[in-house]
Image 1 (spheres, protein in one colour):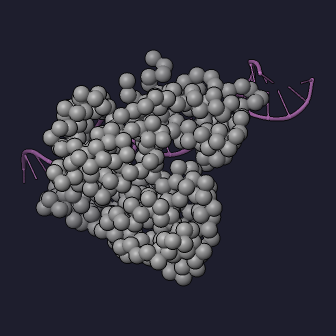
Image 2 (image 1 turned 120 degrees about the horizontal axis):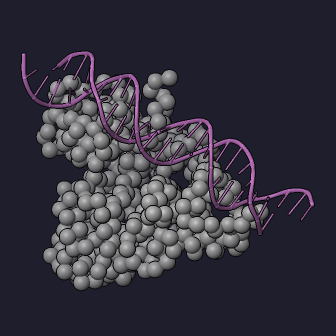
Image 3 (image 1 turned 120 degrees about the vertical axis):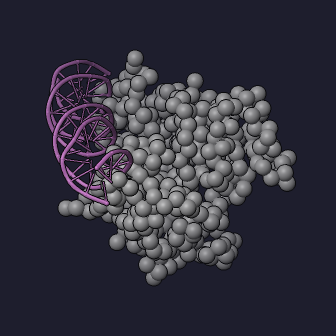
Length: 206
Length: 206
DNA sequence: TAGATTGTTAATCGATTAACAATC
DNA sequence: TAGATTGTTAATCGATTAACAATC
C-alpha cells in the first residue's frame, strides 16, 4: 500500500511540477499555491493537490506551499536528488547532439559511457564521456552499475540494443528510435519522437 | 458530430499505429490484425479496434487489415498525406541539431524558415531553409502561410516567441523549451523534454 | 478574527476491456 | 464449411473534478 501504488500518470506529472517550482524558485518566489501552479500549467488546482496527497502533506491551509520545500520534496520522491550515470548508445548525428546537450548534466544525469559500432569514432571524448566499442557495452555497464540508458540508434537496431542493455542491468531506457521496443515488466521505457508529436497536431490543422 | 469529437488520447495513438504500419509495410507484410498490432505495441487489440472505429471500418472479419490500405487511411485522417512547411525558432546548439535532423523532411514536415536573434547566424543555409532575423518572423510566417512551428529557444524567451508565432498565424507548436506555454484554445502545443522523461523513470529506480 | 487554501471525500466523467454477434 | 477476426455493446475500471470541513 501507500507510496508504491501511485498511478503512473501521477508520477508523470511530478517532473512538470518540479520544473515549474524550479522556475518559481529561480524567480525568487517563496510561496505558491495549487491554484497558481494550476494556472501556470493549464490544469486544475484540485488535481495538483490530489497528486501531492499521494506522497504526504506539503502545504499549509491559508498560505499554500513553500516553493523550495516542495521542490526538494518532489526531487526526493522522484529520486532526482542524486546523480545518475547514463549510457548513450549510438553516436551518429542524433547521438552526438544528445552527448553535447548540456541539459542532462545540469539535472544530474551524466552521460558517462557512449557506445558506437563505428571503429572510427571510438576514443572520441565528449563532455563527461568517451566513445567506446559497442562490444564493451555489457562489461562497462555492469561494472559501473549503470541503470539508465539513452538509445539513439536506427529503428532496426533498437530491439537488439535494448536486449543487450537489459541483460547488462539497465532498468530505464529513453529511446529516440522510432519503434516500440519490448521490455520486461521491471524495465521502464520512455520515447522521444518529435515527428509523432507533429503528426498528432496535424490532425487538428485545417 | 462524428469524426470531429474523437478523444484527443485516441488521436495521440494514431501516429503510433502509423509508425508500426510503415514498419510492417517496409518489411513487405501485406496483412495484419488488431492482435498483431497490439502485441507489437504492448496494448490490447480491443483498444486498437475501438480507436479505429471512430473513423470508419478498415478491416475484414477473418483476415484483418491490409497494411498499406490502413496506413494510407491513417495518414489521411492525420492530415499527413501532404507536405507541411515548418518554422524553426532558435538556432543555438539544439536548433541546429533540429535543423540538420533529416527525420522531419522524410515525414513531409519541411523546415523552410529558421529564425534567430544573433546577427552572426543570419544567412546561414541549412537543409531546406535559411536563417533569418527574428524580426522578419511575422512577415515570413504569414506570407508563407506557415501553420507549424518548432521552438528551440531558452525557457525565458519561449512565451514571448509563442505569442508572436500565434499572432502570425501558427496553429501548432512543438516546443523544446522546458516551460509550459500558455496558448489560446485553437492552438495546439506538444512538448519535448527528455530530462522530464528521465526524471519520471528515476522514480521507479531503486 | 477573517480570508485563504489545504487535504480529502464523493460524484462525475471518460477510457479501457471483455465479450460476442456478424461475417469474411 | 470452419476458423479467424472484425466492429460494437455493455461492463468495468480509473482518473478528474467539485465541494467542503479543517485550519493556518
